[in-house]
Length: 463
Ligand code: GDP
Ligand code: ZN
Image (cartoon, rainbow, N blue to C red; front, side):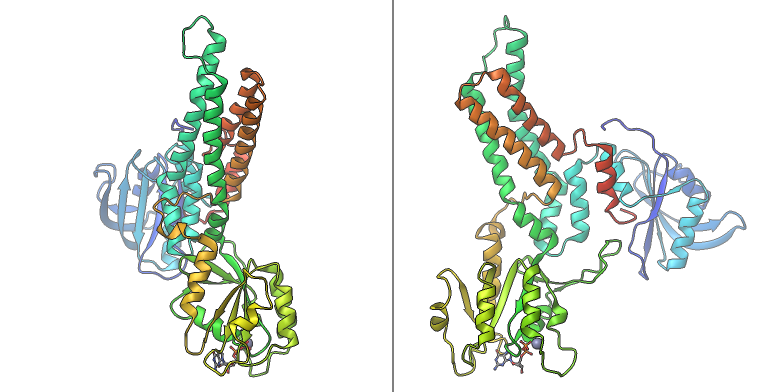
């Protein structure tokens, strides 16, 4: 997809729906300028320099009435988002007004863009590869600064670059091997099994490292499903409120995403926690929660991380013991709350009851003490020492990338095994070629049409 094909001219509102200071209606395609000109009164857009903003009015050509006062950005191909001519009409932001401008463009030669179609064109026109296109979507949905940074780096091409380098490594031995076979008379450095083994091993290890980032990538992208559980009155709601306030709540109402329920997210040092079943712990009435433990059990099922809250000022009760047991197999942090009161349970008492490696953190949510330790523990649990300090944030962020990398790794594993068993090089080459192809698919080489369509359809309108 590196040659520019002419596609029809598309239009969409690119800013989120609702009232705003300004809205942007975007056009892309070889007719973008003439279409805009038909409804624009101001300078002749065909004559203005590229990458300029031009003042004027949108008018309805049927009766000459003025629809809005606008600024029109003219960006000519190829240095644009889509590599096509792009027009952006900055208008005054009311829904009616913005829609009317869009309608005018649609009745004067543009077609309504599908979700993600602008980005799809950037891909089809070879400006970005598939991992970069995916990062645009990640960027829109990023829940924390860290998630945003990973998406920006991916958009920059960090992951693509790494993949391309690995492909070159493979190709260097594949290519030579081909020459050796096809032109035996050609005096070329012969590819030995040893060389092939070294390359295959190096690339495989690199792929394995990438695969190992997938968990972090997924968490950054989707959030870490976290349940706050405990029997009634131990301080769950207080903890929830602490997490939700403190400027940590993440707004998730992203326009155009397909979420039907509003989930609650909090940002803990870059880790987006997706809080599970917060309805179960929000106090909507003054009634004592009677469903506490049963509901906790249910929330447990959906959680990747459990924050089990115990009341340190009261002896352990049977419900506490039940929950301690129920959470044993989970990634969990036990919060020994109410440490501001005289202790009935100490961390030492508790430690004797649970496996050695269990994290127990004494806190007082009321006095906001111990909560820094909690946050540090969460960040450490999921990102280790690495991510916060590391410069590189090349992460595998979705299942598609993961699946292909895993297949590439399997093929490379086979290469390594075969070479160690003295299988002839031309046979080994088949798996080596598979690895090369799978890596190519990660960046979108030979990506099937359905995949492309399906992928971009998850985007929001106007992107
Ligand atoms: P939940 O039923 O588990 O959600 O518990 P709540 O968050 O509603 O808290 C129950 C009671 O314990 C409330 O009166 C809180 O103010 C109080 N509480 C919560 N955390 C602490 C704490 O750290 N110390 C003390 N002394 N009281 C607390
Ligand atoms: Zn509660």
